[in-house]
Each structure stands twice: as C-alpha cells, then as structure tokens.
Amino acid sequence: MSGDPGGISNRFMSLCIGLLLAAMALYGAVAIIKSIWVPLCIVVAVIAVPSGLAWYFIARNRRW
Image (cartoon, rainbow, N blue to C red; front, side):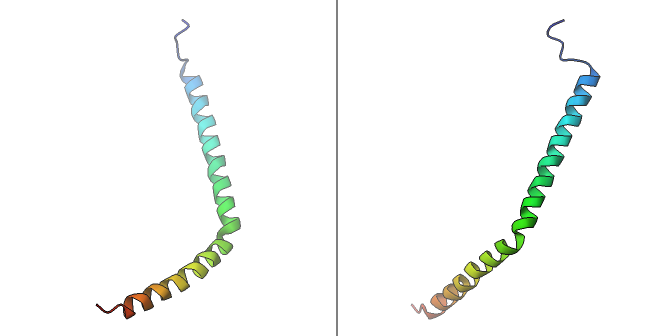
C-alpha cells in the first residue's frame, strides 16, 4: 500500500532521530550561553545600574 505511513520501526527511528536532534540543539544552546554568560551579565549590569539610578533620582525629584 502506497499510503501506509510505515510500521512501528519507522516511527521509532523517527522518534530517536528527533530526540537526537533536539538534544544536539539543546547542547549547542547551552554551550553558547555558557560562553557569553559573563560578558552578558556585565553588559546588563552596566546598563541596568545607571538606568536604575537615573530612574530613582528622576522619580524622587519629580514633585507635582
């Protein structure tokens, strides 16, 4: 039958290949984040601290 999607072995093989690809993608994403984590935290801190201080002083000095 040409419309037969395949037996259980084809489904199992597709599942295994899909899980392997998902694991590889997750491993790559974790490796990328591990390599840029410290510089990313430094950049966020350099942007967040002055912005937070500016917001604090502007909100404090705004007297209506």
